[in-house]
Length: 186
Image (cartoon, rainbow, N blue to C red; front, side, top):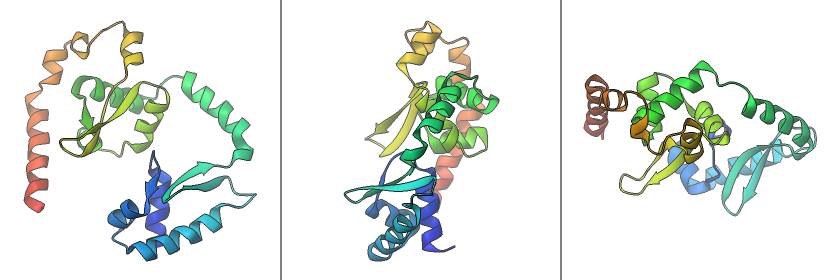
């Protein structure tokens, strides 16, 4: 897999701008090589007839939709925001509600699939918040205050069968074993 391909994939799935240093760490590429490939991608994507552009602010980059398509994107997002949640979104939201704050890795271990797009959509809808866990240096996800207000609860513990589902022993064993395996590999 080429460095350019790796960078393009990262820029496509990220929910926030990435700087050259982070992209270098994630791809294993040297900073000057990463910068060269990003410059190539920047030139390739930032054309009038492209639906996707790459924005640059300082040393941070992010893929965005072409501003000329704002109307159609706005209409689509409005429909997405007001439409019903998919089964996958409901499952993800439920896991976050009962197990949050939870890392993306833990969430994906529980669900068994990549949750990047679902998480982004839940955040856009205001149902989930991304928080920085400064102690463990990771991003975690929790239900948003607006979502709790919509449910008519003041804390997660008021969810039906919260104690039972929050402290599921077999799930905890899975998460602990995976964490232990990751520590062994490091």
